[in-house]
Every structure is written in structure tokens, then in C-alpha cells.
Length: 239
Ligand SMILES: C[S@@+](CC[C@H](N)C(=O)[O-])C[C@H]1O[C@@H](n2cnc3c(N)ncnc32)[C@H](O)[C@@H]1O
Image 1 (cartoon, rainbow, N blue to C red):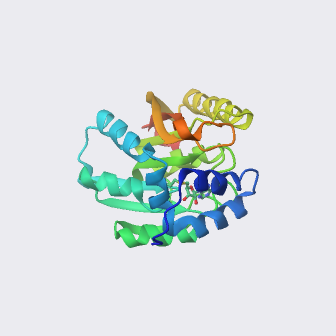
Image 2: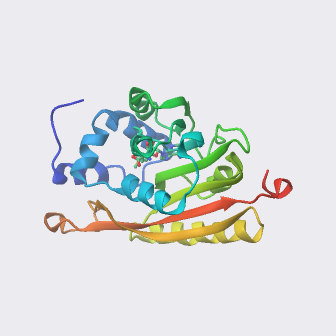
């Protein structure tokens, strides 16, 4: 871990340098960021994993120690780190950045870590295996495309949970992503692939350092949305 911590202004410049890059370049960016990702996310007051895990806790009543969790776009492992505190034990992680997976490996929490550029490569997970599929901080324009949501559902067991957060960036592309994602969620419900459990706003999950936000000094925050779905029990429809 580097001992040089970036200021919010540094992070603003750093993050805005990736606007418009393609997915491969973005993964290289994450490779280069991996070592200081958690330190910088503290500076950014990143709370999406905490809010998601609380959301999950409010809506899940099984035995966490038996649950097989697929942590998609796992990054450095922040989500698994919080879930472990609640008694979850079995994690498989997937990410498109080897650098981030190397950080996740250091947590010692994942049974397996798999490299895949989602949207261009299939989700490396067997069908119908996981009790819980999590994706935090990666459903947004330029990251994990909406088409991958069906693959998340496919990886869950019949009756398993799919827990997703969407970043709520207020830009034209952010709005387009939201519309397209919510259309897909609805369509999958109409196809009886899953049923909707609950949706909740994710409030102030991170300081907004985008170029849209000029007011870094006053620490404007981003909000987003958390969604929980339950895969259909009807095997013929959902596998
Ligand atoms: C903001 S981080 C979130 C990481 C972790 N879930 C967390 O909340 O700390 C986004 C992660 O998504 C990964 N990612 C983004 N787009 C991806 C894609 N298309 N395929 C695979 N991983 C992707 C990045 O490598 C990065 O680790």
C-alpha cells in the first residue's frame, strides 16, 4: 500500500481522466489503482458496500454460514469483508481487473477468484449454483453492461437472491443506463425469471468528484439505487 494519500482534488483529476475510456482501458486503470483503491475510497467516503450489506440484512432471513455468495465486480473485496462480519463464509469473486483480484486474494476470504471482462466474456459461474449474487459499484455506464443482469440471475439457484446497486450519476449516459436497466429488470419479471423483493434508494454513498459537480469543497454526494430480486423457483423458466 502506498503511503501517499490523494486529496479529493487529486481524486477528481484522477477519476475524470477515465471519462470515455473503453472497457479494456478501464480495467488497466483499475489495475493501476488497485493498491490504493481502499485508501482512496475512504477519502471518497465510499459507503455503497455498507449500505448494500445493511439492505441485505434487512431483507434476508436465512443461515448466512450456509450461503454461497457470488461477488460480481468484487474489486478489492470490500463487500465480502463486510458480509463476513454477518456470518457469511463462502465467497467466489469475479472481476475484470487482475490487480483488483490480487487485492481481493489478500483478504483470504474467497474460495475462488475469476478474471472476466463482463459484457464481452460470459460470467464465469455455473448456472444455478449461488444462493446470493451481489454486484456493488459496477452497474453503470462504461462498466458492467445491462445485458449481464440476465447472467447474474442465471448464476443464482432457484429461489436465490440477486442483490444489485446502481450508481446514480446524474448525466445523460447515467440516465440512459437507469432507463435501460429498469426496463430489463421489469422484462425479466414479466418473463417470470425472478420476482421483485424490494428497491431502496442508496443515499450519499460517495462524494461526487465528477466534472458535473463543481462544488468539491462542499462535498456533494452521489445517491443511487439498491435492488433485491429473487430467482424464480420454476427451474424450466429460470435455468
Ligand atoms: C467501483 S469498483 C467496486 C468494487 C467493489 N464491488 C466495491 O464495492 O468496492 C468497480 C469494480 O468493477 C470492476 N468492473 C467494472 N466493469 C467491469 C466489467 N465489465 N467486467 C468485470 N469487472 C468490471 C472494476 O474492475 C472494479 O473492480
